[in-house]
Length: 69
Image 1: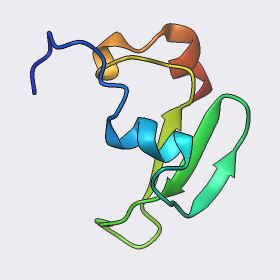
Image 2 (image 1 turned 180 degrees about the vertical axis):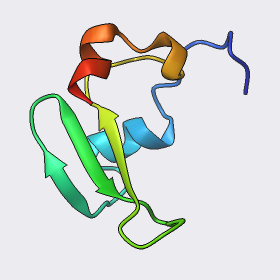
Image 3 (image 1 turned 180 degrees about the horizontal axis):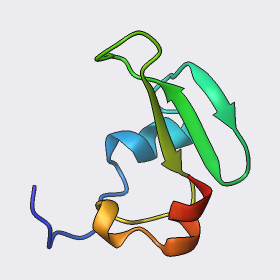
């Protein structure tokens, strides 16, 4: 993986958003999906992702999407 590679439409989070990979949803609205981590570091470990963003990493996420998260 590199910081300069194009956005991968088949990354794990995109696949979860499409429903290709099942997840235990904690919260979902039109902008955000929060779901339980498959390999939690502690009890209640939840991952929160923006639905519309195509950022490859946190440094590229749009300010509006980051504000919603």
